[in-house]
Length: 246
Image 1 (cartoon, one colour):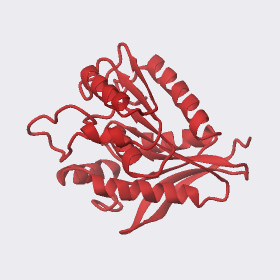
Image 2 (spheres, rainbow, N blue to C red):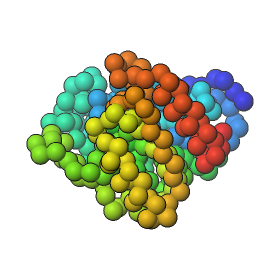
Image 3 (cartoon, rainbow, N blue to C red):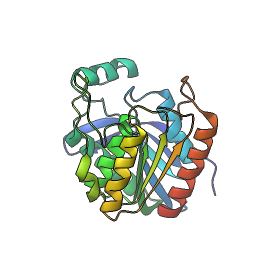
């Protein structure tokens, strides 16, 4: 297994034009699964790029579309995220287009093994579940995705709607990682999602961590919880190892 990978900013083609993306590709010819990383609401930033590189170090080719590229091409992450929020966030239809393009990029690589998954954090967690419904992928990870279920508070700045009953249409196994102290999603909303997946006969596994709230994976934020993050990464490795190969 190679421990060398190339990471760089690229462009990928979508059905409505090219967008910026960040890729980390393993530099050998062994067949490899691919991961589309869906960044959190703060945007296409350095911590998110580090996650892309981490998947390459785990043996997967990985790519992260810049979901705010159309809102503020070339802008700094904070400015691009602000521009995206000002427009109500990333429309679901556009998210599906961009994740589809990311998956197509991975499938076109010469060492692709035929399996591709998604992972998302915060708003990206909800979007990873959305991709599992709308995009042809083999596995999806939801890291504390808000508004997969539940009710959006009045005055919430993003134009987002819970997926609700739509989650019964997911097309692949789901791994969910949550904090028991989170408010978006709350434990009750996680339980609602779990029940919907059960009712739909879906393949899924959920893990919720005591003493962890939102963004417990974020090493650069006060919300970081090392033990929960360490176990979460182990769960991700096992889940992708089972469904994507390595």
